[in-house]
Length: 127
Image 1 (tube, helix red, strand yellow):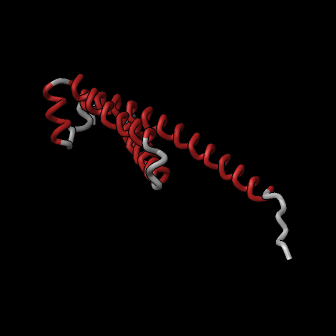
Image 2 (cartoon, rainbow, N blue to C red; image 1 turned 180 degrees about the vertical axis):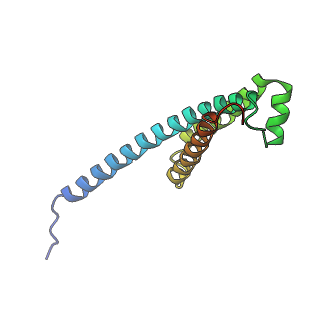
Image 3 (cartoon, rainbow, N blue to C red; image 1 turned 120 degrees about the horizontal axis):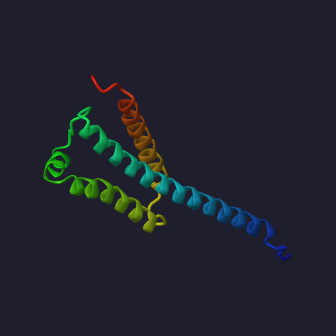
């Protein structure tokens, strides 16, 4: 007896849902990377401000050297390296399986760093 060769409508619906879910995940990744870039620039601006008003001291030796050499080089390095990382993550997003978890983790770290710097900015000047 021949096996029933019906339509594969159920499989097509499942694949269509998978493609939609993949498109939504890719859109979330895109906006998360943009937010990481924005938080990176915010962190750089807050760092320069807090270093200028002497609330903080740069703990990273390379960044302290760059800041002593020129604040513009410090700014370029501090913003260019993470931005380049975001661009590379977006470029190779289909090759890396763990990219969503990594970007969410980086986003959470940047949010805490920016919030900490913002709280430092609220301190009175005489402390």
